[in-house]
Image (cartoon, rainbow, N blue to C red):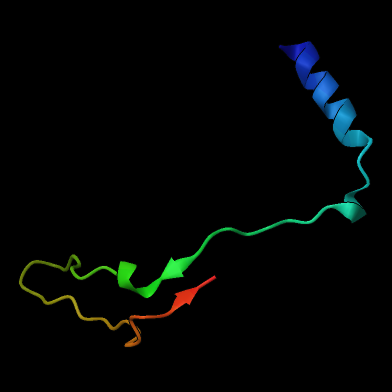
Length: 58
């Protein structure tokens, strides 16, 4: 296993990092907002969320 790690590292060392492209595949849909929250006993949890429920942010 250790030899495989060294081989992998040697392979990575040959790559020019200026040619790498990173893709962020994390998205956010506003309909995923929580509808319920926790609060201290006897108090109400108050907050707000954006009103546009049809948008997806990528």
